[in-house]
Length: 251
Ligand SMILES: [Zn+2]
Image (cartoon, rainbow, N blue to C red; front, side, top):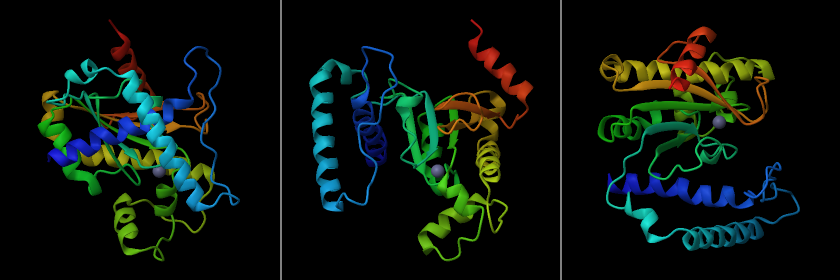
């Protein structure tokens, strides 16, 4: 279990270090992604070399800017406040929702932000680390949801076995609107499954299960990159989400 904890803790740290490297903290100008998108004129070997080089460089910056005391608080024990299950999609990272995720987010990722293929990890966060929040975060334009919304029988067995758990209605063609609706539906499905699994903890108030969508396409019209809450303990109506947000913001 130590290995799982170590990997899950370390991966976000390294990704945050990379992802934040382009942010200019001295002004509020919109940052641009530092890394160029894949392009056909960039050879895979060059991409690999650049990527690892930048990882090591960014990590060294992280090491240089963090004193030993920074790690003292959690070097012997992790005490996260949230178990977060997100899609593995590269377009979502914790820096968009938590500027200081170290020792704060027990982060579980897989294709389709699902419970079924990461049940042990999620259970560890909720039952052993006792995070009071379990959150499922889907995202706009999710490739896993899109694949699971149509015929995926030609994919490999390992990928099929993960998509299979998403259990979405399949169509021959999936429009952008239908994909958006299924991204939300998938989040609802994952919250519903977690509500069954952790029903005693939800009932006692020890855990709240929240579903959200990270919207980098502004499909909700609330801003690019907005985290949109869509489900709180299986409550999905706008009124109940609004009431929850008011409760959260209330002093
Ligand atoms: Zn996805």
